[in-house]
Image (cartoon, rainbow, N blue to C red; front, side, top):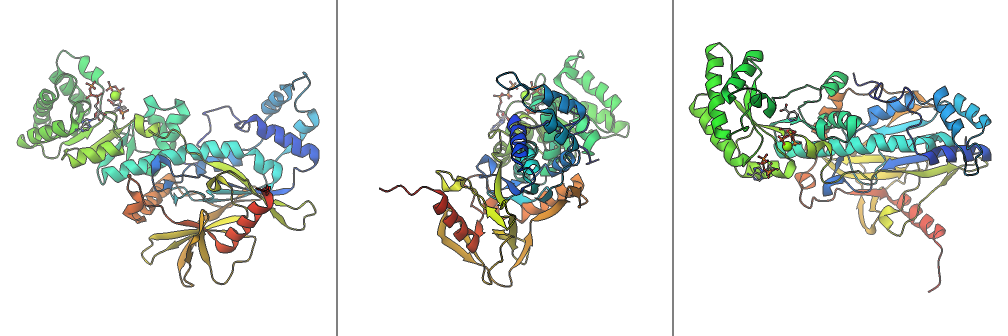
Length: 495
Ligand SMILES: Nc1ncnc2c1ncn2[C@@H]1O[C@H](COP(=O)(O)OP(=O)(O)OP(=O)(O)O)[C@@H](O)[C@H]1O
Ligand SMILES: O=P(O)(O)OC[C@H]1O[C@H](OP(=O)(O)OP(=O)(O)O)[C@H](O)[C@@H]1O
Ligand SMILES: O=C(O)c1cccnc1
Ligand SMILES: [Mg+2]
């Protein structure tokens, strides 16, 4: 069910899901005879979203699906052949289109499993292979990983606020278009919600589907109580009544009347839903009315522009809400509409094949200067499996005996690594020479991983307000190499 998540949503081939400049560069490399120069790229973000302390990686299943099906169809080639240059000639000559027709994806791909907790500057995906191919996939990989990582992270924050309460995702109507909705439902489930109202996401991904009813249901009947009774007739064991169409507490009384009728017939009302007004006050009042009437097990669902901070506040106010329905703010990633993931070249084989040139993109800000090398992420953990620090290192160079993790923004901040420290390597082989070499985990497994990993983080890193920064550094020799490379590339202007 997790396989081929993209099929049917778009054109039969997604190979043109890219920016034009990837194709123009591909043509340029091909003309220069550089298409097969081996290159290494890393996909990473520079800051966790929502001013938070971490992100939950997501989207890899889509990436695998995309790469496995990367092949230009005749329609794709026809379209590329129809593009014109400024003077009216073809942009891409037929010989290049023939090359694209035969192009097969042959790169190695290493990636961090979906559901893993990730931090700034860590490669979530490493692509190594022919320059033309490794470059060509940039845009698709970014669009697939950036959005789902953003939504999975938002969902994990909502889960954090909700604790063990049930969380339902109601976002499809407010999502950024059909795939915005579908991939948000997937990522939200991965990040920790319990179910979705999105039926297509249920069918495609096996996510449990759940829901209540709309105000229009109540408006379609003469009286609210009649509406509840009619719904109960259709779903005697699965009814959640929306009680706020006219007057919330009056609505609760009508729900109780119908709940009594259900009970008399051997059924139990599942819940009521509050969708407006003061949710703390109304949920307490509703709980009291339900309990007084002997309906302690009827759940109280709340919805209405909720997000993690409101949930936290409502809990502090003593709200009696046990199920949270979250739509708009979850699937639109309020209030950070995009994750700023980037894809940067970090190594290129020397033209004479005598070794690697490690490449760097400079920036005025050190934080934006890229990290050269063929990187692996090593996560050091306590005996109890709590992450302590992550170290990025270059697998193409030997590691020194004594490892030291250096903060790339401040080389005086360093952590020597104990020789017996336990760790895991986060990037795992996914493709070798274009062939999938890993059985991808199911969505359920990735969701369980996300849950486990987020809980293993220290609460200081999970908190919403000014979270503690988790230490991610460079292995000392890599940091020194990078510093020297910056000095070498940056013009030294006399004062
Ligand atoms: N006790 C509370 N503390 C803080 N925020 C609350 C509380 N109760 C509800 N809210 C939030 O305040 C906002 C109120 O929304 P709004 O001003 O649109 O009123 P409303 O109750 O939705 O009215 P209506 O839907 O009838 O127009 C919502 O985001 C809701 O989740
Ligand atoms: O508030 P969200 O987190 O997006 O949750 C989904 C919302 O969608 C539904 O109504 P809709 O917003 O369509 O209409 P309403 O606001 O008038 O209830 C539902 O009643 C929620 O209010
Ligand atoms: O089932 C629900 O209650 C629901 C579904 C979508 C949006 N709002 C609410
Ligand atoms: Mg609304």
